Length: 315
Image (tube, rainbow, N blue to C red; front, side, top):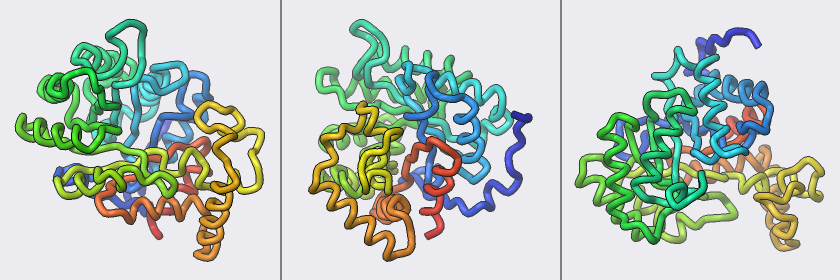
């Protein structure tokens, strides 16, 4: 590919930005996740095309984690290569996030929420991504065995060390989230954002009160898996395609596609068609309409798919 020069009209392409809680941060309504299709086992040229298309259309938030791949760490390595080849001149326009909390390396210090793990993981992530700092560092999951104060103080110290500008949490239960909000506020490192699984098929953050709490406390909220791993598209309405994520059986199992679920998906699809839009667009719009939601985090296996996902912004 030729040397990359970002589209001069990238902020005039229709992307809209939402304030993240009570902070000064504005996030695009649609953010790009590196969970799938950016690992070492994937096509780098395709990953580059997707990232370029995203940025050229105002998607300035890239979301990663230490173990995204496969193999672990390779999505961050892909970003590092993208920074060197394409995005270094635009670093200050990008809002880059990474996380630690799930299994990353062997032994007792490569998982969960200890200070040892979080601090070491962030150092490794910065090296892989060829960055001096990240804009946002998450505790990727709640650790019931490590004292909350240890995990939270580690987050505070990542900011004070200059290795992260903001901190967030992902998939923490409500009561622990309340503790996190109070602790971080009292230590002058406010909780910027909560990342949770929210979509038309999974409304747990709404049902448990997490989304309301975030809205009340001025914490941003970003939804991952907004299309339920592809279920909230037209991919599975008439069977399981051979090249689909469900056919691979890793994150989506064929047993999940019950008659009851299929009936619900077809009903949603009929509602979307009645509105003159694809099911995926309706599903993303539904999330963005919920009180307290800042952004939806989409994956993409092609620029064409990303283009369709961005349609939800201007509805």
